[in-house]
Amino acid sequence: MIFELDKCIVRSDRNLRDVLEALNVGGLEIVLVIDDSRRLLGILTDGDVRRALLSGGELHSPVAPYIQKKFFFVGPQEGRGEVLDLMQSRRIGQVPILDEKGILVGLHTLHGILGGTEKPNWAVIMAGGQGNRLKPITDSLPKPMIRVAGRPILERLVLHLVSHGIREIFLSVYYKADVIESHFSDGSSYGCKIRYLKEPIPLGTGGALSLLTERPKYPLLLCNGDLITQVDISRILAFHNEGGFRATVGYHEYTFTIPYGVLDIEGEIVRGIREKPSVSWKANAGIYVLDASLLERVPSKTFFPLTSLIEDCLSRGEPVGSFPVEEDWLDVGRPDELKKALGEI
Image (cartoon, rainbow, N blue to C red; front, side):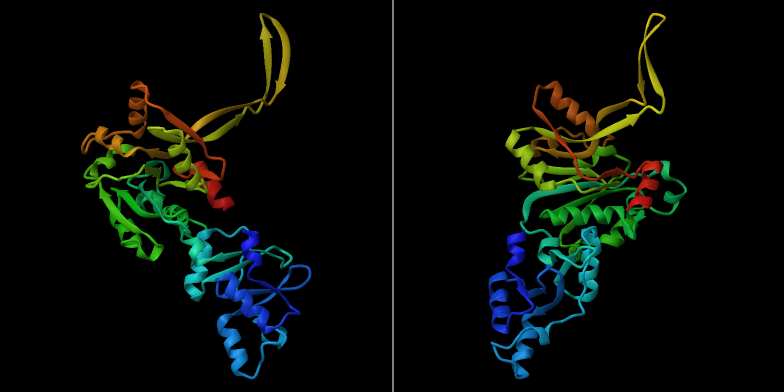
């Protein structure tokens, strides 16, 4: 990525010919002008170069007088959703990434935000839950549409899938489905095609799969609609395929620290003291990859937890893979996790 970025960089002491060469080699319709410390001084587009030449500039003219010194940029911490908002509102296709000192560290492109390589896999997001644990917030709003840092949780998830090349997304809806459908419509404004699996009754985390009228040709990605995560979708799909698994379950390392010193006792004798020890479990992260053939085992329009399908695979001796979700992960279906998300993101 740094090598590709360097293709569209020129130093401030170069000329317009160098800018044209960088535009041609980089292929991103933008050139980033930096100083010797790699601080971004400004930008130039192919349109800027044309205007410079039409106004009397020549190929050997220095670039400095033509630099656009007012430009939009973001910090390394900005998420894909926020960058996409900026691009859409300002009608720009590239946004530089600068650190706190103004040093150029990357470049967002619209093509990169919406996914560089399209994948044939479908994704199903379970977004029909009533969110009883989050009342009264969910009295008027479906749980996946709760906003965190100005954006619905479900929208963050959709954009994350799209950024990894997923173009076919199904949303399983039940509670206040109209709110979700009116927000996403057909998905075209998010760079994908969105279709809806309308649950006649609550069908659990797996039952809505029976509503698919077509069968996917490739492994199906399934995730809960109340997750905020940066899980590497490309990696989990590759892991599933390379491992030859019938199903893959994503897990998150959950650690609980006992807030007291713990005694190791043998009879009446203290053998040791452990101060605030921690215990870890591999917790289900609500992210799965399923072979398409497994959909035949989902009962029609019946409440069916997806974990029952995983247990069925295990009872048959079929291989089930476990994939570590090492990136950020929050299940905002729990009040304490939602508070954490609202406070940290």
